[in-house]
Image (cartoon, rainbow, N blue to C red; front, side, top):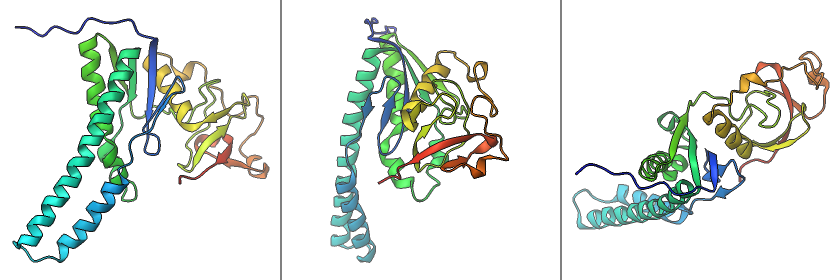
Length: 241
């Protein structure tokens, strides 16, 4: 018997772009945010038990009991994450006709020792797989845009390219249009635009546009930080907690 896709239901939105992160799991182009469950309690227990395991004698009964305890904590995290990802992916697919994500290089990102553990706990890859499978079943369209798209480097309102930003910068005041952009929401809107076929190049504003801030003058301007490509933005910093 052949596979029959689930009949498509009316969607609230034509398309949605989703920017995945650590502090906030998903920021969507319509302004909605999804915060993942806290795994810190179980993660602390696992670390404590792993230290205990390292001190115990090999093949001893106590060591085997500790290994079982560690496995149970890992299962708790996996079950909590799976429940969260299933509920979120179902909501996203049911409410949107086209779902657009960024093709993240997770294997490369986990090489950062400071963020590896936090990234591994999130389940970004699993979320993408669930969205893709449920989109096919429900007659929705799923897109994963190129990871090299500069979604966090361009103003989603006017198209001005300000370049690469440090991860500590969470909001940016665009000097071209004067709109203060939340970093993640701005990226989500750009992901949506790229996914539905809007190209940044068609409306990009170059560095000597309305701002009138050529590279040789930028250092003298207070609170303006240089970015890649010579563009400048006013950065409003709020470091991760």
